[in-house]
Structure formats: structure tokens, C-alpha cells
Amino acid sequence: MKYLLNFLLLFFLSCPQFTSAQNINNEQLLQDIKYLSSEELEGRKPLSDGSLQARAYIKERFYSLGLTSQYPDLTQYFDFRNRRDGKLYEKAANIVAFLPGSESEKLIVIMAHYDHLGRKGDEIFYGADDNASGTAAVLALSEYFSNNRPKHSMMFVALDAEEMGHQGAKALVDDFPFPLEQVILNINMDMISRNDDNEIYASGTYHYPFLKPIIEKVAISQQPKLLFGHDVPGTGRDDWTNASDHSQFHKNGIPFIYFGVEDHKDYHKTTDTFENIQPDFYTSTVGLIANIITVLDNDLLEEQ
Image (cartoon, rainbow, N blue to C red; front, side):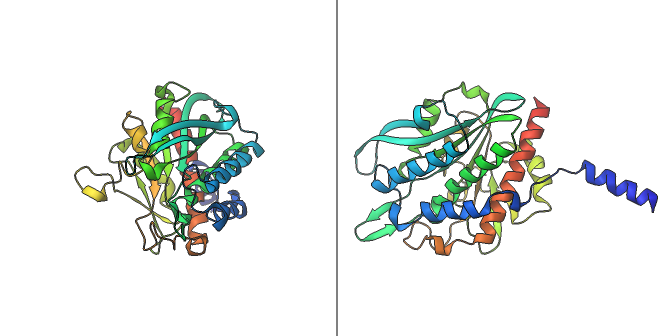
């Protein structure tokens, strides 16, 4: 019995120490996604009143944590022309917060887009899963790591105009406040709040296979079920490598992990509402992502 107890103690001490989902502020997480996908914000189309309100809300949340930024008022403004209608959008905005690491100036960029399709006539495309879910998760992770300082510096970014061709991510990479070589990892979250099969994908390890065993050791004992894939070249729409904002970092050779679910019946429809998210799945997913980032933060430092 003595030897068994000693073995169990050594086993426990050698295992990665994971935060439970309860260490994420789940009440605030759900409050954030509910507000960001509310009727008041009207789907957060770039430059709309709802988008401006979303910006102000995200900035207030970052400021409440004492986070700083390399951009004045946490805001990176940019202009772009929408390829579909030719309209020029001036002063679209990414909201960018910064947390210095305890041991490294290398950067992990954690991001999600906050824009959606907005209002079309009398219909509102609320964009709860796409992508109020990822935006609220960025806020939750910024709070978690503010209270549990990471080894690497972290940048928390709410990106604008993803739905119009990843414009916010392009602007961020083109006007990045540090040499891009400082970024060792990009985490992108786009649609993470619902899945009937209790599955979330971590896409990107086909391109950056060294990340897979690190992630596997976290995910093996946790829920929801984490799957790999949707990143194999030549598989058409099944390949998510260029499907969201992480593509702009990948084009610059920066390793990425894209967390997301497969499309559901409410994707890009007016029924993508807060009432249709799955709160238990969502909070567990954000807790799992927090654990994965924590282990990546530790393990990638050891490899430098």
C-alpha cells in the first residue's frame, strides 16, 4: 500500500495541472456572448451602430482587467474595400490588448472576429455562434491569464470584418506592432458554442505537427471531445486552413491552431441566436482551450 500511495503521488505530480472550467468566469462568459449577440447590436456589421457598441464593450472589458495595448485606446483602425459591393469601409477597427509574459517576450496571439452579417431589411443575423462565441472566449481568456500570468507575452484581439474577407486579420498582420518573428503561436476561435455530437476541432496540426502531441496530452481526459483535421490540402471546403482569420498568420509561416465546430443548421442564418447555443458545451470548450493554451505556453518555452 505504501508503494502504491507513493506511485500515485508521483503520478499526480508529474501530470499536467489543468484548470477546470470553473476557473473560467463562466457567468461572465455567458453574459458576454448574450450581449454581443443581442438584438441591440443588430449583428455587428462593420461600421454599424451595433459594431460601435461592440467595440466599446470589448474595450471596457479589457480596460477593467488593466490590460495595455500598443495601439491608442486599444484600437487599430483600418480601411478596406469590400470586394462584393465595391464599398469603401473607413475606420473599421480591431480591438487589441496586451499582457506581458513572466519569462519571454515571444508572443502568443489569441483572437476571434467580432463582426457578423448585420441587418438585412427587417431581418437580423445575430451571429451568436459566429462569432460572438469566439469573441466572448477571448474576453474570458484575457481575464483568466490576467489572473494566472503566462510565461509568454499574450495579445488578445477582437478582429473586425472577417466576414468580408479576413480584413481585420490582414490589417493586423500588415501593421503588427512587433516583428512577426516574435509570434510563436496564433490561436483563433470561430464558432465554438454548440455541437450536437459534443465535438470541437483543433485544426492546423497537419501543417504544424509538433503541436499535436502537446494538445493531445491535455485533451485526452477532458470534455468536449477534441478532434484534429480539416486542414489537409486538396480536400476543398473540408480544409479550413484558409477559412478564417488564422490564414493571415499561416501565410507568414506562423503556427496556428483554429478551434471551431462544423457548420450547423443555423450557420449564417437569423436563427444563430443566444437561445440556440449550448451553454454546457460552450463553457467546457472554453475551459479546454484555456488548458491547451496553458500547456502550450509552458511547453513551447521549454523548446526555445
